[in-house]
Figure (cartoon, rainbow, N blue to C red):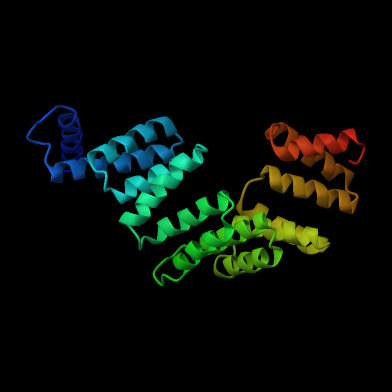
Length: 253
């Protein structure tokens, strides 16, 4: 049965490519748009952004009122760094799906990335107000990350803690708290949070850099050396690797 359904959908997509066929009805166009939207999302998850973009563009040609297609293409344009296009599609998605809680979270992330911090929190809070939304720890985490970008340390810590209270394995919140505690000079707490982070997530440039700073503070030359090798080897083009090289050149590490 599944094979028959997929075949029917594929046939429908092919038929829609022709002109003025019996399949060019509003209902069939909506179905084809929905199918191409799902394909586009699947390709996005695989990192095949060029194919995903084509599928989502096709979906919107078939049904310009497909709110999910607008949302996914907005996320895709945001990922590709095309902020203006992302903003246009987010606006259309919000007009079509004003109560869509995932969209509100995603739009909050977009607003934060454009420096509209206060406005982003409005959408994050609307997402949190939905009693049925299950990904609230992620929303709290997003508020925390956005607050850090704004320089609001108190708000960042509050929301990282909220996320961890609901989901103790929230990786970004653990790493965020590790960084905050390091900045406060609470090195033991920073090490504890970093250790917890490494139990649930792989090393990143940020976690390796923090590990180097903590090792430097503790005078652990072996750990400095091993983390430095990892950072420069695995993430040679990262901002953290560049900072490490500058500090090494200055004799500070």
